[in-house]
Amino acid sequence: MVIDRRTLLAAGAGTAAALAVPGVAAAGGRPPSAVRFELDAVTLDGGEQVTAVTLDTGRLGPIAPGSLTPATFTVHAKATSPIPIAPGDQIFSEYDLDRPVTAARLDRRGNIVLELSTAEGQVGGGTLGYIASRERNVRLDLVYTITQHAPLRLRDGRAVTIERFEQGRLVNPEVDAFGYHRSGSGMRYRLYSPPGSARGARHPLIVWLHGGGEGASLPDGYYDNETTLRANRGALGFATPQAQRIFSGAYVVAPQSTSYWLEDGDRFAPQIDEIVRDLARRLPVDRRRIYVAGCSNGGYMALKMTAVYGGAFAASVPICGVVTDVVTDDELRRISTPTWLVASRDDDTVPPQANTVHAHDLIPGALLSLYDHVIWNGHQFPGHWSWIYVARNDPSVGPLHVWQWMAAQQRR
Image 1 (spheres, helix red, strand yellow):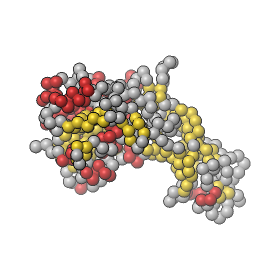
Image 2: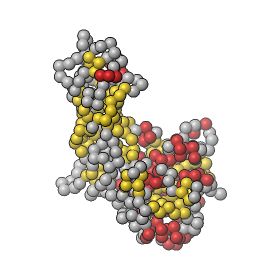
Image 3: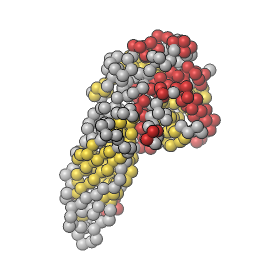
Image 4: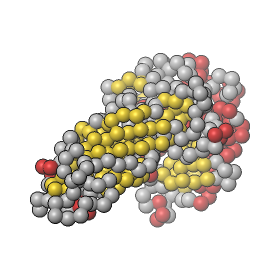
């Protein structure tokens, strides 16, 4: 299913860049050598953004905080597609602009942290771009250039201007907590392991199935195992401390399609099942508590998995999933896995009445959360993005929220 990412702001990693105030060095000593910096990123509900830049300045000596202001440095960012774009094609959201520095501070290691203007829907700062013709998100190539405009002062009174800057890696602790893996049949996936999982206790396994925009684009050789965690908080939500407490520690696996799930569900379903079976065999997974959830294309795939492998799952949460012409009424009626469906009435990508509501009416005992709009923290998102609510544990029936409901389900 096509997911319109025109408002999605997103982000990759780039190469080195540097500028400095000419002719100024540490008073009474040699100019400091190159200083590396990292791009600090956070996956917002609307996609990952670079929210800060951390300069490895701790080794220069104690910096006097009073010499550091938001005007000491400027930060320029350029984001371009990692794969060739055909003439006339469009990619959202490439950019080439200055990132406003909203604050400058020292962390506990003495490194300078430049906090950057960040907001849902903000132009620039994202790590992903959406290629219209391929209907895919790709991780953008980022080049950040830092310019120093005034010397820093060390506590001993010396003035320091950094000679040059070298860009390091993109750092997102939530994303980085998921390891890279490949199944025997070649499907790539990211896996989060709960703290303490090596000690032998059995843990639930949550399978997150991404939307159409997060699959690979193999005609271009692009299969990055990245966008599933950077485009939205779908998988990340289940790895948060709050979710991990509710599930008493859960593995979270996010397979990445080699294209998009709807292209060939009959082929992809066995590949997902292979990953689930392999993890359940190799890891201390409680086979009674395996759950599947997914959005849009992944919502369809969640229904497909319970229709074909229903006995494997304790619960299913299909979000704004495609049903029309891909999941038959007989298949829906036969689903016995406890199911909680989620959508928004203003979804103009996958009409909820013909898909989510229709599935709810046919799946025995299914629950339904049907929102009017997708609004979180005061920002209104496209109506298709109802996965935001599941990633925040918002859907509820009375006092019971969706994560607690999932965690309470066990396969007999």
